[in-house]
Image 1: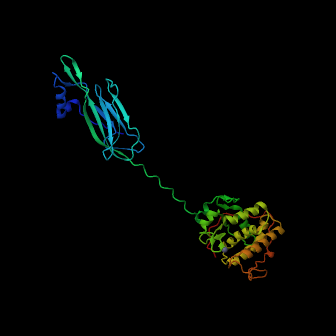
Image 2: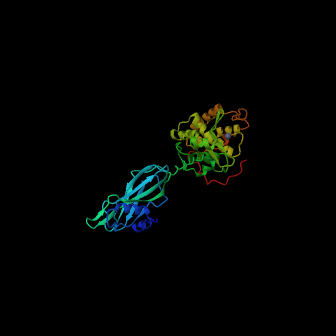
Image 3: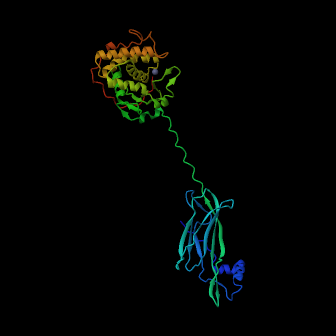
Length: 377
Ligand SMILES: [Zn+2]
């Protein structure tokens, strides 16, 4: 920071150029023989604020004067006016006792000023003395006044408030690969549900020689609303989806994932819990190329008993889970999502799982690393 010094007229300069002063001196000296200004009156510097300075709105205007040695002043007053010429305050910077070696004094206004442009003026004075042959030196009580300024002082406006933080971008399915992996869905955050992934993989492994590993995203309700583009469409509620552009991911709503978590936690099958298994398998079937919704549901329902066995259920309990899945899916399927003519024992979509060896408990294979996505059939 540079410190600016305002050169002020010394007494000598005033005397040479100041006709007004000469008139005053003449009046003071009318009855005296000799007349002089005190010889120790010298100079001072105003070191702050600099002319044209800007200060922050929170800063109280403060003035600093450096009094040079030997001065003899009677007035040192800062006056500040607003843009309309109205006084808004002032302060005195004259030391009560000016030491022989000079001094630096400061004074401040009583408070901060509103933002705007101001002018300040420094009023200063020093006494006049006469050397009377009879009475000796007599100093007048009426000082000669001089003014320095006016100078501009700008109180800046406060900075504008920072802009509000940008609204978080709605999640898309592109965020799925970054989801944290977890074997437990609590509904508090979206996860890559490893338990559901294992179940889907193990179940398809029972019927497909080399099923590709499918990743399962369990989204919170809010996230699912965002990634699915709206979970409600007319009278139907979207509870899961598979997207061709992300063929190895199954996107499941928090609603369905919570039902599946309850099935794991309680081991008690219900229609909704059975349906959550259907949901995951249904989306998996899309990933394996089954595009017909009723067909995907039909296959998924038939796979539920296998899934129950992969969850460690007894044969009977797994069969019960399957019957719950069938009834729940058949009774709640939206239009186009169930085809009773095809989906029946001996029907076109019967996959004859009686021929499939039911896996013993706990032999669900561990999913392998996700292979490169293949174009959906
Ligand atoms: Zn579907």
